[in-house]
Image 1 (cartoon, rainbow, N blue to C red):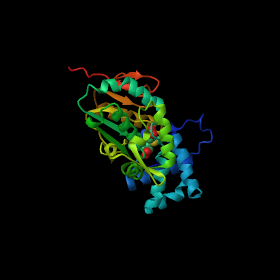
Image 2 (image 1 turned 90 degrees about the horizontal axis):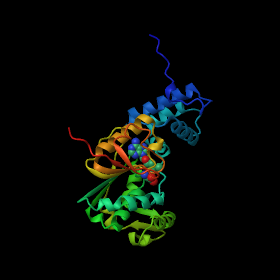
Image 3 (image 1 turned 90 degrees about the vertical axis):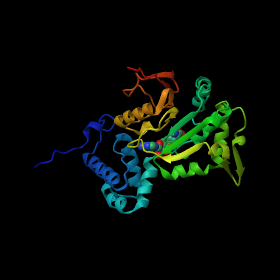
Image 4 (image 1 turned 135 degrees about the vertical axis):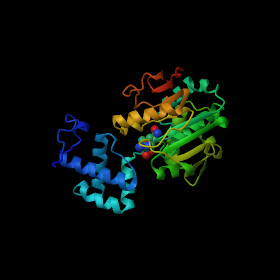
Length: 295
Ligand SMILES: C[S@@+](CC[C@H](N)C(=O)[O-])C[C@H]1O[C@@H](n2cnc3c(N)ncnc32)[C@H](O)[C@@H]1O
């Protein structure tokens, strides 16, 4: 039987990529399939544009002629897989990234959080933890940290481990101080960390409230009864069906009238969920889950 060639043409925008190479696409599909079967990381639903760019960086890193050359290396050498994960899971982050987002959350949502007996917050795609600590500081300043728990998740165990240690460089600290001022922090960033030997260590009372855990938005399940879900600068790398799955997961994880924070780079309007969330702040993409109607 002759097998129909499958070049995943549906995923390809020919206007954006006029030099589309069907053989390169086959190689990419084979590599992603090998990675999924060998290591359980399924990147096939990430955006095609992002995958092309990132896999070409991966190929250049090993000075390989093509991606096929790297498939056996990926299968037999976990270090090569580690490198691929570092390249595909873009882990750029900072404390109070986009300070205006946190300022808006403080002004518009925090007053409502005071009505909750307990606040559970899921920070999905937390990278090395700076965002999770930012949430902890914000809740602390609102007097809510004692009755809060933050679940900080990511697919990349290396960055999660950095988050668990709570140790960051001086460079990260300087940027953090600046962003903290911009988000309207009422104390000094130094009140939340200890500085020594050119690094900082986050305060124990913040660390105690955060649980770091591996969770993959491609196939893992819901977190129950979250009051806030934050997934910022993560779904920009996803294709539309994975975005759809992720927002469904967030919707199921949130309690009635809970808050979904997508940040400036993502919107709910491109998913099927715009009717079950109402915008709380359109500019910073903060949404509130509408109460479910009982039958
Ligand atoms: C650019 S960082 C964003 C970090 C932080 N949320 C922020 O806004 O600064 C994206 C993070 O998403 C994580 N990520 C990518 N794919 C994921 C998936 N399928 N499930 C969970 N996390 C994922 C990456 O490992 C990376 O740490």
